[in-house]
Length: 203
Image (cartoon, rainbow, N blue to C red; front, side):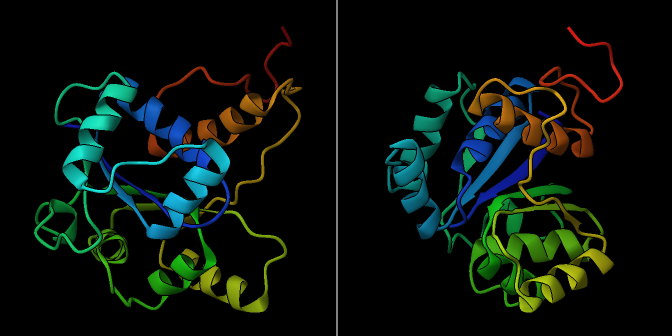
């Protein structure tokens, strides 16, 4: 499987975006290295009533079943699995999305702390000149948040706040989720038909 990507979930609100994105990446035949913080698991349980298995191996198998992936297509990694491919520039995927992305994670990435595998994975993508997309969900942004995001944007990181549009006339929450996931997929170069594009004929 040549197409590989790292998908990280953190403690910001927005679990539906992450799960829909995971589904779309699997359908597009990506191998997904999945990282989830402890806070992300709390958000998943709160917003999606999902309680993921604790061990990376069990989580990988669970998610492969949930999303109809082949064995090994979704690889869950523990937060201190330093021998995971995502920890090294010689093996890590060149694309990574943090969705949703908490302001604490934004700060850690902006300052290169690399205290856990998720932060290290983002650090690797930046240093290797790969593609890193952060999907923050916070309101309002403080000056600290804005300064951290500006610092990252100047390094080439794409900051894509979870702020869906309404010109496609959404009829459901799922339509709003698909709007944001479609924008992420566009930036990753993944073909999709999730939403009607601006300027296209109305259905």
